[in-house]
Structures are given as structure tokens and as C-alpha cells.
Image 1 (cartoon, rainbow, N blue to C red):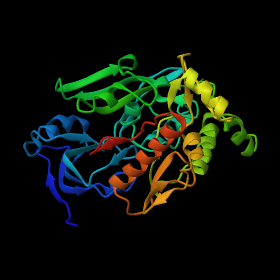
Image 2 (cartoon, one colour):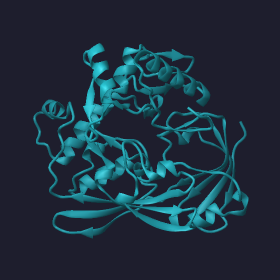
Image 3 (tube, rainbow, N blue to C red):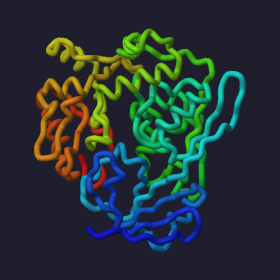
Length: 356
């Protein structure tokens, strides 16, 4: 495999790599290569980097930590842009709350730790989610009864259509379940920073199953934000495989939202099926993992591509699986669930180079 070639940026703040491997830049450890990899150290350099003559008229893919992407082809045509700027600062501070600005390249879990160290509450239920701060609003990350959208004040992006930096207030971000305007317009918006309003007095959210029990196992410690974060991390480590040990992108499928009538019919047919209420009374959310496991896919392996034996919602790369092989497994899982239960699963990660 040929080594990539490095080129300095036309201006300070970014650099280019030609024919660059992406294997260590995606948590599924798929060995794809990019025509160009653009590393942006300063957000102010992003407009110059995107208009670099060597990249002119090329398609652009913005990549965070690579924890929510599947490279389905061996080559990514055009330019892959990765922001590495990672400063965190307080913008406003009063007795009750702090407005925090995190640049896109800051690690998400490191930001959770930083907020806890500042005595701030809110992000503890989102501990140990892989990825960068800039990717968090794209997916509207959520876990253990919390979603990022609850805390977003605004998202700063470089709008490639307008050719300038814009600030979108939370209500303009189109946040929904694992969704946002940024996810629907990936060619337009490059997230450069996110601003979060965090509280000093927020009561911890313990409604999600297992949190109270985990705190009890930890010795009955009080439900402080740091203790809740530790409980979440313990739960996640037990349930989900570690990407450092086996390639994976976390939950590969969204929990499906279906008409309430279908949910009722499935509950009658499948006793024990987890069903969750959502704000819209006409629909219900089902457990994708439960359906996948019942369909018999947990622990499935074909070559190096498979489904985790630890959690049915996680696709894994045992070493040398290609993106195409992982995608083929994902399609088979989704087709099986659809044929057995009449429920169509949708992937959480962005699939690059193919349609699902």
C-alpha cells in the first residue's frame, strides 16, 4: 500500500495529505483511502482550505472522529476534511448556568469530563459516547434518557452555500431523534463549534432503566453528576464492545418509530417487546436490538464482518472486513427484521459510497 504524500496548506492553519489512509480515522477500522485528506487546525482557515486550488470542484466529506460512519467503498473520491481545532471556553457565567463553547475537534467524552470538572450538570448521561463535539449536533446524540438538543444554545457552522460562518440557534437546527438539519444538508454545513448552556443546579436524570441500580451497585453513592457519569460509563462498557479492541461504530441501527397500531400488534405477538412512548401519541418507539436478537443475528459472523455477541445492535469488524462486507451484513439484518416483524430498520451511521 502506497504511503500518503504530505503538502503544506496554502495558508496557515491547515495541511493536505494525498492518497491518505482512513483506517485509523474510523472506528470500524475499514481500510478506505481518500484522494485528499485536509486537516484543519484553525476554524478560520476552513474557507481557504475548501477553496485550495488542488481541491477545486472536488466533492467534500467532513469527517469527525469517524465513530459514526461506514466507508462502503475502498476509495473516497474528492477531499475528506477533518477539523482538529479543540479549544473550550466559557462565554457566559452566572450563579445558575454557564454558556460553554467547544470547537468541533474537541473529543466529546473529554468535553463531558471538562464540564463535570467545572461543577456543571447536564452532560453526565451522555458520557463515553465516542466522537467529537462537532459531530454531536449532527446526530443529536443521545443516551440514557438525555439528548444533546436539551443543552444546545447554538451551533456555529461554515455555510458553504453562503460562503460565511453562521450561527444557528437551537430552534433552527431541526433537532429530532438522531437527526438535525446538518444531517440533511451535509454538503452545506461544516460544524465548527457548538455552544451549550449547562447548569450548576440541574437535578440528575435517573429515569432510564439501570441507572439507579448501577448507583446502588457502586455502594449507594449519591446521584451527583460525576457519579451518574461513572454509572453510565460502567453500563456502556458492559453492554457495548470497545472500539479500541474490535472495530465498531456503536449502535448501527436506530430504534424504529412505528404506528401505535403496529406496536400494539407486535406487543401482543411478542410478549416482552420493549415499547417506548414518544411525544407523538400516534407512534411508538421499539427496541431495534431486541428485534435483531429475536431474529437470531446476535453473534453472527461471516468472515471478519459480523454482529457483536455482546450487543445485537452493534456491527463489528473482526480485523479485515471491508466496508462492502459490513454493509452486506447490515442489509441482511434489516431485511430479516422487516420480513419477520414488518419493521424496517434504518442505519445510524452515515454510509459513504453506497446506498443502504
